[in-house]
Length: 412
Image (cartoon, rainbow, N blue to C red; front, side):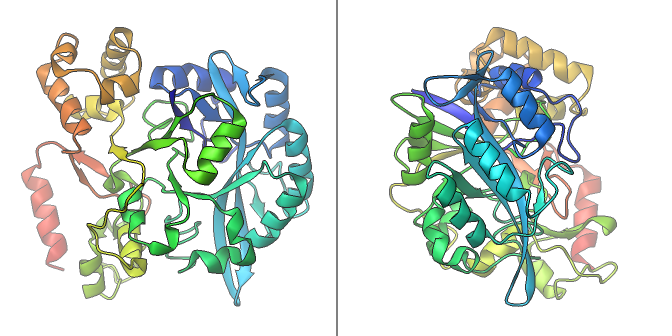
């Protein structure tokens, strides 16, 4: 039984998140997207936790259900701590088996930060200390390093991360079974680090809204004999039952390339090094992106492919393709209409993106969009890289203006 899961999302109680996020909207759009399982997000926030307790139905499987969507109890925390006289900032996704365990977790976490201030609380707590205490609460708790390459708040972040996973988790490294790629990297980039050989590679959206161009934009595919919490946990810990991941193009992520948002400048790692990792326009330090950071830490070539790793599929969200085809923005009526027409004709967005034949698509949409969906499926779309908090951009026909911009960038 293959199931699509997005276990890293947020509620309306997290900063910079949609105020319309609820179990109802999440469940509705999960079904449309093709997601069978969602993380609840934010179980550490008391108001959201109360909502979860009131509205979720506990199943014999150990999962929870709202309408037709299964939920796991999850949250994300921001660990800020000192290591060798330097401030480190690492985000983690936490999975818990039941509300009793969540209550114990929240009681412990509340000693290190204000849980009501943000759905993703900031904690003055080191990862090894956190993992040690969690193991005393339950062996069914799972901690996953989130978006491990993001510059500012991650395991390998260029601004506050580590060069080695062991330095972060020390004698508790055996409690870390999987990592999350984040939008600016994919499994192939992570395969280049031999230090990650013993952990599973997962992908989730870190969605701040329920819209289908955010929810499930990255996801993990489980292949389980029976859908249970224990089977999901076993797959995360051992790899048995992991069928692959859905990835956006790494270039689509907000921190793929090096860059300086204020000046509108992005560079490849070799270009950034040429300018001493400083903006060639204003000469301030660049935000070093994921591509550069991977190059710094990799001990394998870019074409390295390991044995016995699950496959991955590189896909941009369907709404992005529709918007690009009609040369408009994501939230316009035409994008929603075309999206709705496709969903009414086929089972879900993932079914459209992964499986629907071109001739079937052309019965519903224009050939140009049908062709774009097929190109997306084969990974043959060009994306101008994201940088310094700016999303990457799908390029269909590069304009003369963009060519001039790129030339002027290289001539600084």
